[in-house]
Image (cartoon, rainbow, N blue to C red):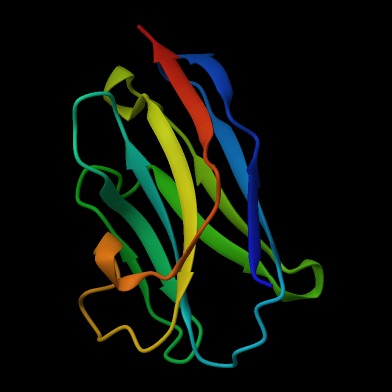
Length: 126
């Protein structure tokens, strides 16, 4: 059974940093993508960043380029999202997700992912 468990969310002032973690268990595929998505109240879920293990490619939404970094620790089966220079617009529930057979260029599309965590709240105050 695949499980994704996020942690690390919280409240921070604008300009601050947070690091989110996503502990993965039960996912044994060798070629897959993992991504971070976020959803603010009244808005659609949007792709923030993704990493595809087969190709080694990473993808970032324009709104977070240069501020957010995705990384993975295979030994710990954990996905990370380092968020710097946070802005009030980054306030949302953040989810990690995993999926296979995701075509290049579509890794930020939520519909491509099969497994999701429960989310962790990030609140940025200005």
